Amino acid sequence: MSLHRLMNISDAIPKRAHGNNLSMYSIALEGWRRGLTLKFYNAYHNGNLEIQYSLSDQEVVHKFQISKGDQVSEQAVEICKDKDLTKKYLLEAGVTVPEGKSFTEEVNNDTILAYALSIGFPIVIKPLDGKLGRGVMLNIQTKNELLEKLQHVRNELGFHAVIIEKYVTGDDYRVYVVDNRVIGAVKRIPAHVVGDGESTIESLINEKNKERKNNPNLSTRLITVDNHALSILKEKGYTLDSVLTKGEYLFLKDTANISSGGEPVDVTNQLTEEMKQQAINSLKAIPGLPQAGVDMIVDEMKGTSYVIEVNTRAGIGSHLFPVTGEARNIPKAIIDYYFPNSMQTNEEQANVNYLFDFKKVTDHLRAGKVNEVVIPTLNIEEKHITDAYEVYGDVQTTTYKNWVQKQALANKISGYTIDLENGNALIVAAGEENNLNTFKQVIQSGSAIMKNSTIMDLNPYTNGPIEYGFKINVQVQPKKRNKKQANKQGNQYLRQKKAEVEKERKKLETAKKKYSNLLNSKSWRYTEPMRKVIKKMKNRS
Image (cartoon, rainbow, N blue to C red):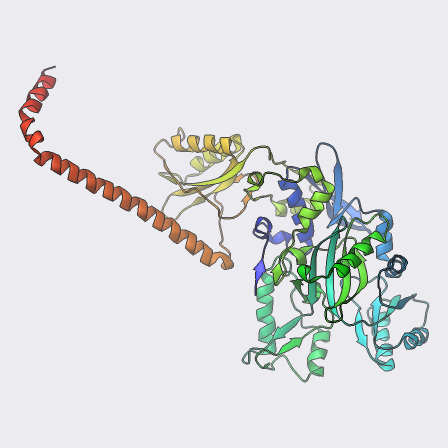
C-alpha cells in the first residue's frame, strides 16, 4: 500500500479535525500559514448551528463553509441541492448524464414503475434530497426488485421524493475542480475485505478498521456490519465466521461512499482530457460555481463518463489522505483562487509547520462560551526556523519552566518544554531567526534563579509541526507509524554525540602525547634552569 502524503499537512491534523472537520481545518490552516487572518465563528445553516470560518488580508475578507467559499453563488447552491434541476443545467450545457426523471411524494409506485419500464432495466433509485449515499439503490434488475426497494426507500427510510435513472456501469469517481482546473480525482471503492486464507471475515473487518483509524479522513468512518452488509454475506453464502481464500475480494456494500466504509484511491493522472473537461464543463454549466466536487461514473475500458452530481460543499479529505496514490493539495488550490496575492514565492518562509489549537477553538464555540475566535496572525515576512536545546541543571522546577515560557513569549517564540527522564529538560522553539537567536542566548545565560544551567544544541530539529504559542510540560506521544523513524533519529543523534565524544578524546590523547614529547625533548631539559629562575622571580614579586 503506497501513500504519498502532503508533508506540510499530514502530521498537522489533530484528532478533533478528523473526519467531517478535515476540510474546514485544512483550508483554514493553509490560509493561516500564509499570514492571512483566520476567524472561526458560530453560524446557522439550514436551521442548525455550525462552525464556519473566514480568512482575510488587508484588502478582502472571504467566508467559508466546510470547503465552500463565498464566491460560490446562492443560485449555484440552490441548483446543486436539487438533483433534477442540476441535471437540467448539465444537459443544456451538453454534459453527459444518465437518463432519468424525478418523482414527488404524491406520485405512486405504479407510475414510477411504468417510467422504469419505459427506459429499461437495470435502473437506480436515488432520494431527491439524499446525502452521503443514503437510500441509493443500484443495479435494480427486475420489476419485483424495483417495487420492493421503492417500498424500502419511500416508506421505511422516509425518502418520499425519488429519482429514477438508467443504471450506467463504471467506477465511482469524485473529481475536484477549482477555477476551471481539475486539482484531484479519487476512485471510491465500496467497503471490502481481502481474504488471507486464515482470518474470519469479522477479523478482516476489524483489521481493516484498525488501518482506517490511522487515516485522518477515515478514522471516524469505519466499516459497520449493518443489515445491508449481513444481507450481502447471506446472499453470497457467508457468515462473519467464514474464512475467505487467500486473495479473494468480498464487497460488503453496494455503494462506494466513504462514510459507509468506502476507500478513496487517487486516479488524477488516469483521467483522460475528455473526462477532465466533462468535470470542468459541469461547473461552467451552473452560474456562479468556481469550485465544487463532481461525482462521475467512469468506465475506463469503454472510455465513457457520466456526471451524477455536483457538490458545492464537497469534502476534500479523500484527496488529502487517499488509501493509495498521491495526495492532492486541494487547500492550496482553493486559497490560491481566493487570495492570489498570498501565493508563496519563498519556500523558506514556510519551513516551520505551524498549527493552532483547533480543539480549544471548537470547544469554546460549541459550548457557547464565545461566538467567535480569532487566531493570532503569523508574521511571514521573515524566515522562520525550528531549534531544540537540552538544558542541564535544576531545570524541571515550575519556576524555571515558567521563566522559559515568559522569555519565549517575550521573543514571539512558539514551542514547548518536555521533562526528560535523565533530569534534564528539552526546549523546542520556533520563530523568526533573529528572535530565536535572542531567545537561545537568554536561555544559555540562564535566569536569576537558575544561573548554573548549561545548554546542548540539538539543531537541526525536524520532529513535526509546532503549535502556535509556548507550552510547558508537554507530553509527546510518538505515533506508531513513526516509531521506526523516531528510532532512526534517536540512533543518529546518539551516533553524532558518540562521534563528538570520540573526537574530543582523540584531541585529548594528541595533547597528552605532545606534552609528553615536550617533557622528554632536549629543549625542555635545557631550559629547565631558566624556568626555575623565572618562577623564583615571580614569587618574589
